[in-house]
Image 1 (cartoon, one colour):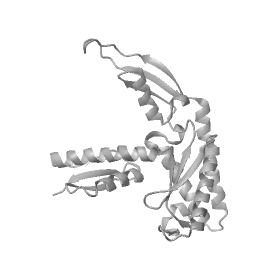
Image 2 (cartoon, one colour):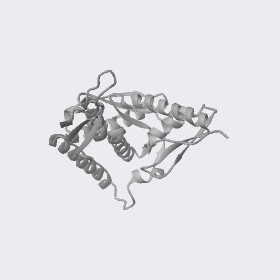
Image 3 (tube, rainbow, N blue to C red):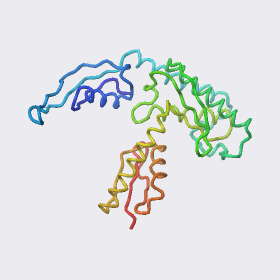
Image 4 (cartoon, one colour):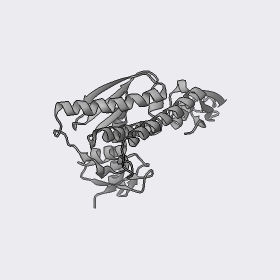
Length: 260
């Protein structure tokens, strides 16, 4: 992961926000130096030079992240060593587990899924050196949602939610391995996914409006599978356009096309 960056913005505060987004952390995780404070303008006149800051990740936070990565790898290795098979890991063979649908499980089995997933997430939090609580509830589609709640959790989200996506993937892989089947479990950090979903839906609507208005394809930035799904779902009722995913991971992106 990147440990430092130089960012620009209309003001020092906004330049700092850009840098924090690039590094995927909150401000208490970094140190920074103001390279240029930017120019002050009076009535729209004068110097409009942008502000520039150099921002770096504190060594303590960088070490926590590396420790968490090692802890997560060790955790997965332990689960793999429990099997006497020499075939590829189960999380790389999605068809190796039976997929359980909503309604397939008893309340007791649902509790077991939640318990295993919570255990996996708690172990990863320990790797980050973070103490937090995990709230569990049922999502709109019957999935189990684990929302991690605490202080200074930005390091668990990462840029565009990439660290959170990694935690999600690993938590699902470990839970699947321990249970022997797959059931939808979603990991969130202080409601980040909900806030992100609202923002993604707005991005999708703007893209649809543009595609319909200009009668041309609109390509969005590369997104995770979760983000692409949000875009597709939010636009499925829009009769003006159709959506598709193109490209290879990690550069797969949504294309919004005017309906011909």
